[in-house]
Image (cartoon, rainbow, N blue to C red):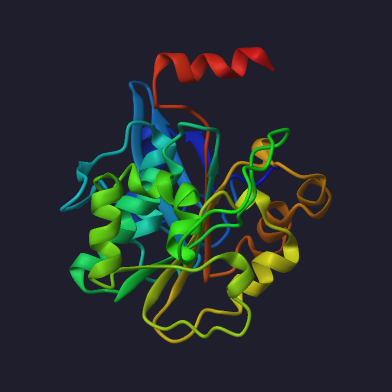
Length: 273
């Protein structure tokens, strides 16, 4: 994928001064909502994003809520992604990246923050119930829909206080769980529709989710196309199609994360490829 949602460019002092004063950098073209990471002689100098054809400065983003405390960016790509998640003018957001890059954590922290701030009534959590490739089915699970999908909810629970925090959010009506197969025909208002592990979605699945967005709602997706678990998702390539068709649309924002921040051991996983 050529489009990553940002460009990293080294600017002279004169070019940077004009960027601050006029919001213009003539040597590159930027798509709407695309970020510019400016490098100077001493490293990262500043961040900008393209809005209505001009580059505007991006303030330092931080996220937080009652469950997670404050989350701050650990690398330039996270800086851009966290700003995107706080940008209320972009209702369709996509963050991709390798395992441990912080994409799901940032989305969950930002989503709960937005709900607690009153921007949305709830987070509607959607995940295709697909198991990891080359693992055996564990059979039918007892209980209601929340009980059956609970194993797929645990990545969300990891960032909201565990199973108890998850239950608390559901009881307060701030989290609704809808299996992907039950989404057809829904019209969801005043909510963040959050799709985790969206590499396991076809183009038609993504179209289905986009069609559920009603007044006051947004659709947030994260994923890593290197972790697809069925051949159909490799063939359809829903995420790549989404980026190719929507890049530059003012309603769409995208950032690709490139560094794992989970642990030193997690970073070693790439060495097995």
